[in-house]
Length: 180
Image (cartoon, rainbow, N blue to C red):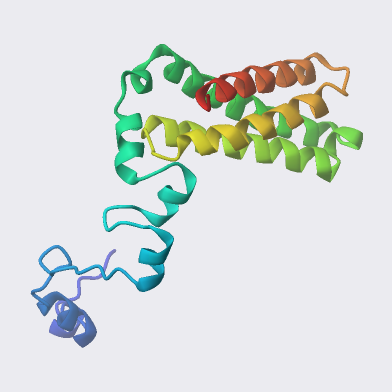
């Protein structure tokens, strides 16, 4: 039998919650003034330029132009997303099988590499699905890790390990295409 509490003290909000909910100003309503420092001016940064994106590939406007181009909606991108998802799934399943087998298959270096590969492929697919401005960077690191994982898996004789190596290499190649 469940208890029903009718005591008013249980329905009251703590004072700190009341204080927060009574604040009528939201961040969207506040004026945000960005101050450009002398250091920014000396380095050549403009007001509408993201310092992080500017150091990587140009202004945010440049990155947004690239992002909205026809290439971003191509079959190549969809293939890259699918290859990343396939590699994530294969490396995750391979990790579980290797742990079950034990021995050299379960050595920490090998398992960590499989897990790194699975994780970066998952993140990379997410960045590409959301059309993140930074997905070319995630594709680059994804290709490097997939290549290393493929080489490591090829050292084993089992078919499932060869399949994992092949999936990693296919993902690495698709990712490399996305960074060009």
